[in-house]
Image (cartoon, rainbow, N blue to C red; front, side, top):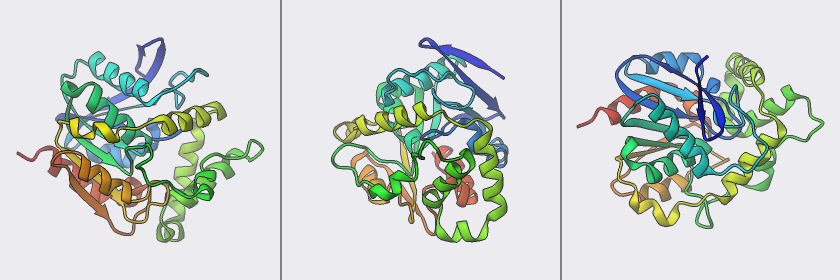
Length: 266
């Protein structure tokens, strides 16, 4: 499995397909494996797909020192430079959408088009989830790993999806348990998210931007997508009905329709 050494740590990554480069950035505690094989395979019909494990996740190094969103954006930039990719479309979800914002602001020359999924600008202007929702994302230390993962799904996915897609949830749980993030990653990622704030800089985003969210997202409520779309110059907004925070799992066909249409538009 390919490994690149960036800023004193090893990052695991993979690249597949042909076409214009599309960098995928996963969110809080999640490794690149959570994009799921089915979605990756379908995206390779349109793009050269690049995905990786953020520091603290998957097969990448998991330092116990401070993490910041700008630091993780620099990780992503380092990966693109290692691959000699001059410009890429960038699709980040949740915390990955925060990393994508910082990537577009810190390394604008690398970002061709920006897709921000189920994310926010952070800071005091962001609309926060209720504490009981956020509590589901940081499991108690004594909770068995499988129960901890299943607990997350109750807030990540819409009620309808939870009730009707049991086989999918079982497979997703198995994938999440392959490379579980250690407890210190949960804490360090959450601290990075809490310090993140791009509100005052969003007007500086130069890449054409698409903001996507699920209408039933309770982790990062849709009001955040409305704010991003209003603050980023000429941004487009797509609100997906009957989908929660994990819209890229629940509404994967809509994602597969949206991304090529947006990225290849003249």
